[in-house]
Amino acid sequence: MCTRRRREALATAIGLPGADGWETETADPLAWCFDRGDGAVARGYGFGNRHPRAQTIRVRLMLLTAGTRGDVEPFAALARYASARGHEVRLAVPDDSGVDLTGVDAVRLDLRFGPLLPESGMLPWTLLRHVQRQVRPALRRMFAAAVRETVAFAPDMVVHHPLILSAPMVADALGVPRVLVEFSPVATPSAEFTAPGGPTATRDLGRYNRATYAVPRAAARLFDRDVARAAAEVPGGQAPAHRSPSRATLMAVSPELLPRPRDWPEQVHLTGAWHDSAAEASVDPAVADFVRDREYLVASFGSMAAGDARARGRAVMEAARAHGLGVLALTGWGGLAVPDECRGPDVLAVRAAPFDAVLPGAVLAVHHGGAGTSHAVARAGIPSVVVPFSADQPFWGARLHQRGVAAQPIPSSRLTADSLSAAIAEALTLRDRAERMGHAMRKEDGLAAALRVLESL
Image (cartoon, rainbow, N blue to C red):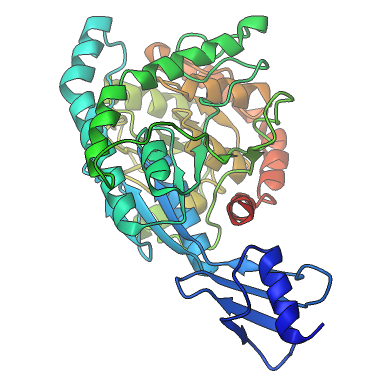
């Protein structure tokens, strides 16, 4: 078969038009490159009756995420990873994530997520008032911004966080596939465990486990009218008549922490956590000096700011000193504060520090149990004491404990110096198991697995 006819056959096999546009990429006559003229490029090696040994099509990916730092950092890592491999990527994020987006084509979603977080122990009617007065208007703006930014980018694929409820609508309006991303299995039911979040997150209800996933679905439906209003931003100003299912779900979770349930459908891909191991962490000199030649724990409650931060800090300092440990306190969004009477040379409080730089040298970590923090601590190979506040945190606290790398979780309302000291003693017995798990998790390449899925769709 002549070269032109071989190229035509190959183009048909991989869904590209004709032979026009083919160019030889190197001096090797079997290396080929097809430029479709609209930004899509296919590359590979070999012709004849076989498919090319390697092929890549440059894709325009619109990534949409909402939430706190733990919801944004993995998307930023995927954006950098995919961009470095020739794809065109734009990332839409909340305005206050605090994540370093250097080198990322990023746009804002007209949303400050911090004020939307409910306070721990809110009464039901207080929570309802909070949703109506603050959460709903903010999410309404976000839904519209997500549609507007996606239309402006004109992507080949939409990849989105579950909170971006307008993503399915804009993907259908543009006629492109979409992929759901989960950092906790909230939207993917299983009979093996209850839905993360809510009062049943740490309980096994047996045959009723799958029924608990109706709760997050019902919560999403509360915003149907707000999503519908965002249709004004789609071409034609009207939402599509039908909603297409996601082409795949990327479960950015380590199988070490959550082995794949037997009843997940095949389009759910357990990729491993999305960790940018190539990123250079810049460490404050004061932090570097503090963690050098010292046994210490890292305390971080992330975006949790509810309750008495000073009392929480006092409990952490007293419990750590009972075990002869220093404390690197990451104060985050205000959930942890160091009272003046607890300060000393064995305590350093800073707003944030790169986990990759400070966790591996720590003895253990005391944290809130967010999905991102739970994975970071486990990957570092150190045990945890989880103090969950809300949302999926009790789920991850229970998971870490079940997998043998964390003490029994302490609900935030029950945190005292004595309860934390006992939990630290328990966690210190788990160091060998945590080290083995960390070694296994560091072998995972969640970003590569995720991109393989996206390129295959």
